[in-house]
Every structure is written in structure tokens, then in C-alpha cells.
Image 1: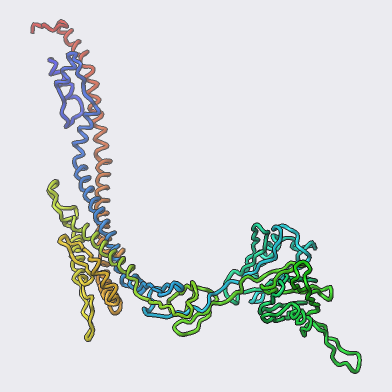
Image 2: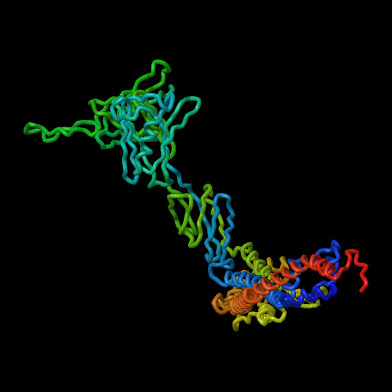
Length: 590
């Protein structure tokens, strides 16, 4: 048997295959050449590649479906954004209803809520609201010991707090301790802090809110109190001092140019400071105990020659004193000075008096919040509430931007590619062609004014919005600004209509057939593509597991057997030659 016959016989005994066999390589191996035999892995891979031809077709179809999904999803996103723009332009609380307020005075600023009625208003600020504040006498440090006394904080709303000071058990023995005690009490609505500078430390108490109702008073309790020295020739200003014992106050009013001598006499002769006797006969008489029992003495200060005033308790009971800012100072107790009296803001708005506890005024002009920054000195500030052209312009330009994105994505599907020789993957999709038609027709909307009325804005062109040759839109900023400034109501009517039935509603309704999450064209189309892609995936999986896997096993076994046989061929040929008496050199005679 010749070598070729032996090889053919060998191969005929192996499994049948459709893959070609390189006989030359086999023969080369038979005669001892270095050319390798069968590459089983490559041979099997080549055969499987040919068998997978249907898979490659399915994968190409699936790639097309993926591209269609990407394109449709991008159009869905752009169309949804455009629909959102239309919804914002079709609501009474949207950009078209936004308002801005201009003021003729730097003493008054204002903002207006969406939908506030446009108009002009006047505001006169007579006085600003003030926040009540008191400060203590100067101490050397925040921790310096305080005299045995007490302070009482009384709010206009009613809550009261008395804090003993000094060395008694439970007393506040420093400014820091008083601040801590005030902070721990949540009923007063005041804040206490210790303020230190180069001269020493003071306790500052400030109301948490402005206005008269949030005001408060601070009184100290003493057995002896001394006023500051009045320089020679000086007099008191118009003010008052309130003395309190046992919770009952007595107020002594001082007039302008009054002296300490006159003030002392007023205190000593105060009705609540003098015991009175009733029913003198028959005895015993009824004595009414005064609510305040003190003695006031005016004297000359030996060091300066000025006048001073001392008030001393006639009993062991301590008395409280609300000190006027012009004379407030204590030398034998711990006193406070009123820095600011809590007061309401006083305004006249559109001719109507208005009182506000805060410098932020609401309710006086419906929808408008006023911020009072200073008094207008009787001159009315003019406030103009109008449409906010900046916000409206931004909303309209956003609509144009999103429209251009949507129409651009649609139009790109109909661009012919010289490279591929085709249009976009969605060129034949009815959803895309329908969207293109809908977007183009939306631009034809126009307003027909009611009989007897006119409008300056009946089409998009009146707003400076025009269509380019590629279907996109452009905005003439000057034309749009002119419409927003001079005819804001016509602009609003174009988009909203008489009852939210204008351009924005028309476009939104048209787009809803595409964007509806349940039955919109995008939802239906994408669902169909997804189902088709899933079917292809199933076909590929079934083909791979039902045919390719088995074929790979068969081919691998077949080529492996052939390779083994091929490796044994040289030995078998040597045996044949020996039996025939052929020499290894192979010169042979027949």
C-alpha cells in the first residue's frame, strides 16, 4: 500500500467531518518533515465558526435593535423634556405667573409670590421694629464675684424669672453663672451672653424676637442704690424710675431739667411709699403698709462737687429698680441698663396704617413680602409688582432648546450616510415619522382674539421665534424682550389661553400620545423591540446549547483521533517497508 493509500485508509476510518483536511501536511509529516500535523484547536474553531453563521446574522439583527432602542430612548427623553416645558408654561403657578417687585426707595424692598396681582403700591415707613436689649453694670471679668442681690427679668408677655446673686447657696456668683441660669429657662425667649472688652465684662440680654410684645424689663434688688454723679449745673432728662417691693411697682416720672433733689422728694412723697392711717377713731386705727418703703436722699459728691442720689430700704426687704438710661448705675448692688426698647414697626401702606412686630411685613399687600430697611422720612416709597420677564424668558428659551434637541434627533434618522449607504436605523419606524410630523405641525398654532379684543401675540413669530431650514427654532432676543416688557399679558394668554387651553396645552396634548408611560408610542415601540431582542437571545442560546456545544464535542474527538493516527503513521510506514524489503533510503525496485 502506498503512503497516500495508507493515509486515505486511515482517515476513512475516522468520524465524518465537513472540514477540509490538508493532505500535504500529513504526507510531509509522514516523510519526517518538520511541518506539524493537525492543529486540533484551530481546526475545530474553523469548523465551529462556519457552523455559527446563523448566530452572526442574529447578532447583527440584535445590534440593530440595540441601536434602535438607544435612538428611541434619546427621543423619548427629549420629547418628555419638551412636554415638561409645556406643562410649566400651562399652569397658574409656573414661570408665566412669576412676579418681580421694584422699589423707588432703598429703605423698602419687596418680593411677590407667584400669581400676585400686578400693580403699584405706596409704603411709608415711620419707624422700624426694634429688639429689646439690656446690659449689666461693668464687672472686672466674667467670673468676678457679684454682690448679694438679685435680678428679675419680666417679659411683656408675662413670664418672669428672678435670679439671686452673691454668695448664698444656689445664687449666681458671676456673670457667667447668670447667663447660664437665663439660658436654662426656656420661657423667657431671651438670649444672655457675656461680652468682654478692655474695660471689663458685661452681661447682655437680648430678646429673641423684635417688637413690643417681645420686649422685657430687667430690675435689680437692693437694700441701697446710688445713682451716678451729675456734674455741677447738669439736670436730669425726661424719664422715669420704677421701684418694686414685693412685686408691686411704683413709677416716679421725671421731667426735663429736674434735679436729684426734686427726684428724691418725688420718691419720698410717692403714695405707695408713705404709710397712711384710716379710721383714726375709734381706736385702733388701720395702718396700710406701703408697697414701697424707701428713703431717697440727694447730696453733693465730695470728690467732684456734683450731685448724687441714694435710695435706701427702710426695712430689711430688698427693692427693685428699673433704671433710666440717663441715670442708670448702681454702687452697692448689681444693676442693668436698658439699651434698646422693644418696639413694633410703624408703616402706612396704600394709605392704611400698619403695625408689625417685625421688619418683615406680610399680609398688608396680598402676595407681597416687605422688608423694611429704614424710615422713609414721610416720603412714600413706590412699589411696582409686575411679571418677572427674566424667568419667563428663561422658560421660553428652554422650550426652544428642548424642541431643537427633539427635532434634531428625529431629523438625524433621515440623513443618508455615504459610508453605509443607508439612513438611520429608525428611518422606517412609524413612531419617528409620526413624531416629526407632530413637532412640525405644533409650530402652526395661532391665537384668534375674542370678538372686540386684540392681541399683540398670536403666533410664535410674534415672540421672535422662527423656524430654520433644518426644522430647528431660533429666538430673536430683542423681539422676545419687547413682548415680555410691553405685553406680558398677551404672552401669557398665548401660552395659557383663556383657561389653560393655549399653545402649551395644545403641544402637551399632542406629545402625550408619545410620552404616556402606559400606552405612549415610545413605550409600545420600545416594548416591541425589547421583546424581539429577547426572542433573538433565546434563539442564540438554544442554538448554542442544542447544536454548537454538541458539534464542538464531535469535532474535537474526530480531529484528536486523526492527530493520534497521524503521529503513529511513520512507525507503520517503517514496518510496511521492512516487510516489503525496502531499504530506508527508499531507492526501491518496484
